[in-house]
Amino acid sequence: MNVKLVSIILPTFNEKDNIISLIKTLEKEVKFKNEIIVVDDSSPDGTSDEVNKYIKRNNKRSIKVILRKKNRGLTNSLKDGIKASKGDTVAWMDADFSMPPKILNLLIKKTEEGFDIAVGSRFIKGGKIKKAGKKDSLAAIVLSRLMNFTIQFLLGRHFRDYTSGFVAAKREVFNKITLRGDYGEYFIDFIYKAFIFKFTVIELPYVCLPRRKGESKTGSNLWQYSKRGIKYIFLTFRLLYERYILKKFP
Ligand SMILES: Nc1nc2c(ncn2[C@@H]2O[C@H](COP(=O)(O)OP(=O)(O)OP(=O)(O)O)[C@@H](O)[C@H]2O)c(=O)[nH]1
Ligand SMILES: [Mg+2]
Image 1 (cartoon, rainbow, N blue to C red):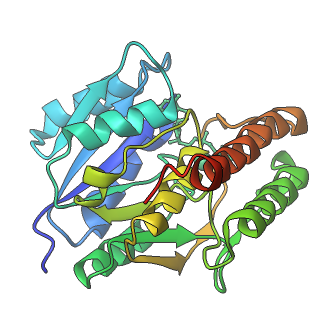
Image 2: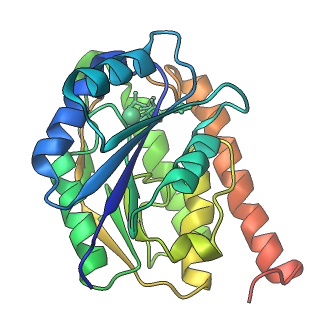
């Protein structure tokens, strides 16, 4: 089935220096009719003002801004984006150029070919995380790999990038699955449920680049990364508990 409209959701917090060039790149690269939805958590750097100026100056009807004022957070922002979206395929990615817009095209194409969900993956052949030199902590990359390996071990190795956050999915998926979580752990929940509900899922490799400008929201030191990591592992055990002890899923 042809994709008639794809909704591209861009969650932002302090992405002023990336967002307009990312939107321009998406406008150039994405070969499908699209709407872009920027979901901004009232970034102090004025990210949403930048986007609104761009929309006004260029009379862009295909770009929307959702300016959030309460219940901050990545997962809540994505949920609002999905709610506001109109596409038959819904996609999202980070707004810092770590996820190549060219790959987004391939993900959308996979939904057109019939897959329910297509995920950009750093942990299958052809994918990797590219370091950014000194500033980027090697420990953070090792930790991310280690965590993914633990999650794979607990939830199944048929899927690799449980913390991807780079995805295109058919709208029907969201009739069954509501995102749950606070930060990046929502993706573990999303993918695990996708398999339970028997949606077809494919991973495509991509090289995750260092963010182009601005600062990381995940953390800047090992302690901050570890704190996030604990939440991810906790959610993994919660899913297993809900499935096998509470028998919550079909
Ligand atoms: N709306 C919203 N977006 C957020 C929030 N936290 C992070 N983001 C966005 O979510 C995406 C991922 O955040 P990043 O800071 O890139 O996290 P990361 O990829 O682990 O860190 P980097 O190594 O810097 O790339 C980016 O587009 C952020 O702007 C939030 O609380 N609300
Ligand atoms: Mg990032």
